[in-house]
Length: 114
Length: 112
Image (cartoon, rainbow over all chains, first blue to last red; front, side, top):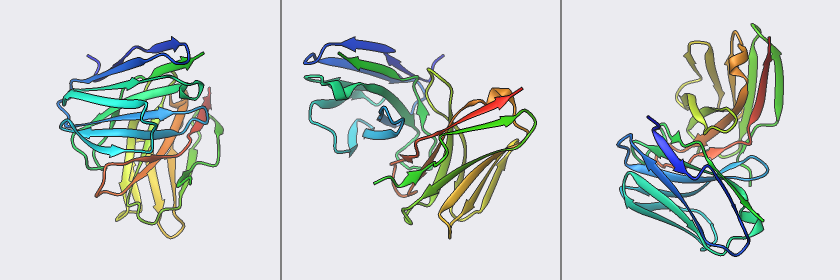
C-alpha cells in the first residue's frame, strides 16, 4: 500500500492548458504539502494544508490553486500553464504541522510544458 | 536567498568506507535539521534528524553531527554500501513551524 500517492506520474501538455495533479495519503495525517523541484534540484514548498485549512502559501503565481476536499486529499490545479512550470511536483504529508514531524513524500509528478 | 546549502553536488566513495555529506545553513532561527534520501523516480524518504539541543544523533550506520556555532551539519554513513547510492537532501526548520527548507542535494555513489 502506497502511503502517499500522486497521479499522474508524468504529465506532458501544451502551454496555455489547465491541468490538475491529485494527491492522496492513507496515513491518517492532518497536514499535507506541495513541493516543486525545479531544474536546479531545489525542493521548495508551495502550499501546506492542515485539516483542510491553508497554513502555508508561498509566493506562487495565482495560476496555482490547491484544493483539499478532505484531510486525506490535496490536489493541485494549474491554469494557463507556462514553460517555466516544467518541474517535478511532490506531494507530502505529516502527522501535524510541527516541523519535527516526519514528512512522507509521494513519488512525484514530472510535468513537462511544451 | 539560499538558506541551506550543500556545496558538494556529488560524492563518490568505495564500499565499506565512510561517506561524509555536508550541509551549511545561514538562518540562526533554524533549530531542527533532517536528512532525506532520494532514489531516482521516487520521493524523498526521511533518514535521520537532530534537534539543536544535541550535537550528535546516531541511528545504525547513520550519524548526524551538528555544529551550531559554525552553522554546519554533516551526515556520516559507515560502512557505506552500494544501496546507499542516492541523492541526499539536508533540510532545516524551526520547530515552532512546519516549513522545511531544503538544500540542493548531494549525489552519493558508493562503488562496489
